[in-house]
Image (cartoon, rainbow, N blue to C red; front, top):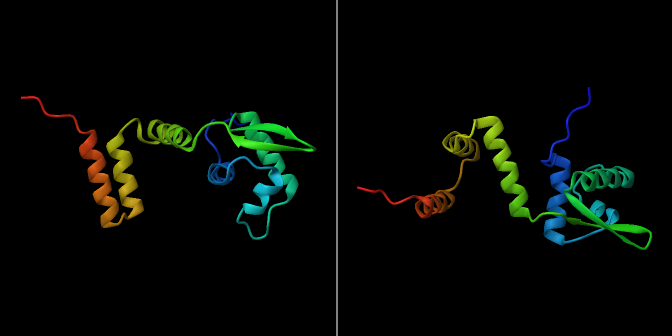
Length: 130
């Protein structure tokens, strides 16, 4: 039985998306040159990956001469929110506290990052009613 298609990007797809989010629209060759792999990936592998990403709705492609230019279909923040939401539901049964606890246990954030996290929580906290 074929594995169901996930809307979330795979690690390889996320690597391509990171390049496009940082650089902007690019061709397969341009993306391939920016991929950090040793040994480098074959052109046909990157082309196939980006074509699948287009089919999944992660990228949109526009013809330019004999090549295609690929652009991210959604901005970085929307894609990452969807990925985190999916992880939250599938792995943590919707428990934000369980997700954050596991994240903090695994990430070992600096004091500055912890201060930023505290500030974010403080701005999102609802005022207590008496």
